[in-house]
Every structure is written in C-alpha cells, then in structure tokens.
Length: 137
Image (cartoon, rainbow, N blue to C red):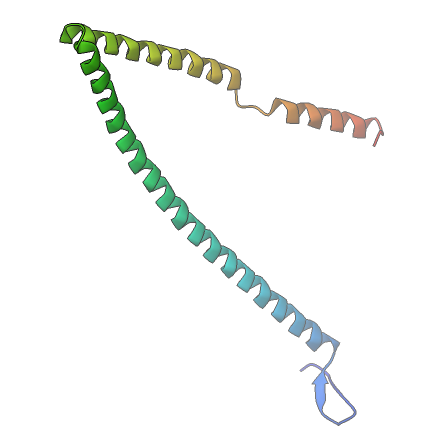
C-alpha cells in the first residue's frame, strides 16, 4: 500500500509514487485516445479515397466510350470524302501510330527509372559514413 501524505486539512493524498502512477495512467489514456483518433481519421480518409477512386474508374470507363464514339465520328467524317473501308483504315493507322509513340516514350521512362534504387541517397550515405569515419563532422 503506497504511503499517503496528509495535507493541512488532514486529508490523505498519494505520495510521489502514487502521483507518478496517476500521471502514467493519464498519459496512457491520452495515448490511447490519440491512437483511437488517428485510426478514426485514417478510416474516414480511406473511405473517401475509395469513393474517389471508384468515381475515377467510372469516369475512365465513360472516357473510353467517349473516345470510341469520337473515333467513329472521325471515321464517318472521312467516309464522306473517301470510301468507308479507307476511312476506317486511316483511323486505325492513326491509332497504331499513337500506340507506337506511347510505347516508345513509356519504355524510355522505364529504362530511365530502373533499377529503382535511390542512387543519390546511397551516395549521400556513403559520403556521411566516410566523413564520420575520418572524423569530419
């Protein structure tokens, strides 16, 4: 049983050990509440993020349909001057050119980014280790 001190009115109060335990208990309660708040906030943000992603996927699907209709419109417009098969062939050739361009640019970006190693951070870490080893701070 912890020692209790008496104040001027004669009532007992906890000693230093009891006060430390009380502070530790309250600190644990505050940490628990902070964790609960963080979890609640993260859950709310994840739900919002999920809804946003779902809406973007829906928009991408509608964009795909819109792109199809736009290409059909272009083919129909060309078909007013040329035969239909030639208009469709022209639109298809243009699409293959766009695909080829995207593949070339995408492969260049991938080659530039691989391997995914933080080269600058590694260089800085080596320089720091060398500086510490040589006694330069």
